[in-house]
Image (cartoon, rainbow over all chains, first blue to last red):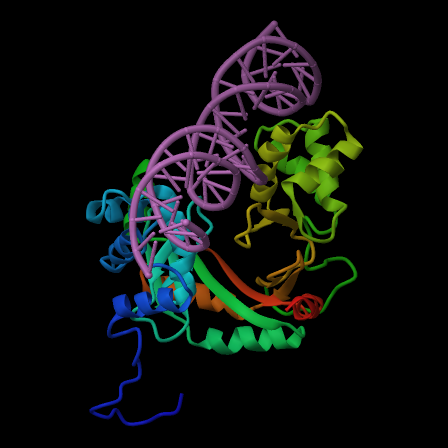
Length: 165
Length: 165
DNA sequence: GTAAGTGCAAAACCTTTGCACGTCG
DNA sequence: CGACGTGCAAAGGTTTTGCACTTAC
C-alpha cells in the first residue's frame, strides 16, 4: 500500500503472479477440493489466453489439452477459478459472459466495448476504488464490487457502418 | 444547454416531460407505427411506475389495463419504448433486464445495487458524461452509451446475513 | 382493403442440474 | 470403500420467432 523502493528480494506481487498454477493447486487443496486433470486442463486453457474468453472458448481449448473435459465441468469450474481470484468475470451485458485472468491488473479495470464487434479493451480506472467506496458509504452500504463500461464503436466498425448506410 | 432564468412560458424540458403519452403517440406516428390499445396499455403501465420494473412486471400491469396484452407484445414494445427515449434499459447483470422511465433524469445515472435484495438506487454521476467521451476519443472510438454500477449490500441484508452466519 | 400488429405456442439461447459412473485418497 | 468429481442429457428461465388471426388507418 505504501510507496516503497523496490528491493532485490521482495516484490509487490509475491504470491499468485509468479506461479498461478501452483497458487491454484494450493487454493484447491485449501478448500478441500481435488486437483483433477479436468480442472487443471481448464486452468491451463484459461492461462494460455491473454484476452477475454467465454465458457465455450474455454471448453474448446481445455478439450485440446484433455478431451474428456465436458461443458458441465467448465461451467462448474469457472466459479471456483473466480473465487480463487486468478480469473475474473467480465459481464458486458451480452448473451454470454466473458472471463479473463487477473494476471497483470493492479488497479480497477473499466471496459471499453465496441458495440458492433467483439473488441473489449481493458482500461485502468483507479478513481473507481475511491468512488464505489464513497458511494456505498453514503447509502450505508458495504461495497462488494463495481463495473464501469463504455460502449462505443471502433473505427473499423464505423467504417463498415458508413459503407452500408 | 445554457444557464438561463426560468421564464413563465418556456421550460427546460419542453417536449416529453410535460406530456410523455402524447410524445409517444407522436413518436409512433413518425415511425409509421400504429397506435394500438396494447401499445398504449403497455406505455401507461410503464408510466404508472416510478421505480425499476421488469418485462414481467410490465406484462402484469398492462394486463390490468387491457387484458388482451400478451407477453410477446410486451417484449416487442420494449425496444420501441427505449428507442423513443421515454424508457431506458437498466441491465444490472441479473437474469432479467430492468427498465425505467426517463422522466426525472437530467444527468447520467449510475446504479447502486444491493447484492442480496432487489434494491437498485439511481444516483447522479454527471462526471461520466465527460469520462466516456474522453475515453472513447482516446481510442478513436465513438461513444454510444455507458454504465457505472456499484454492487453493495444494504444494511438490512447485512443484518440478515449477520444473523445467519 | 391491406399491411402492420397481435396472441399463442414453440423455439432459441446460455447455463444449471439430476443422475449414474468414475476416480482419488 | 466412500465421497468428491465427472459426463451426459434434460431442464431451467428469459427472450425471440413463426404463423394465422385482428385491427388500425
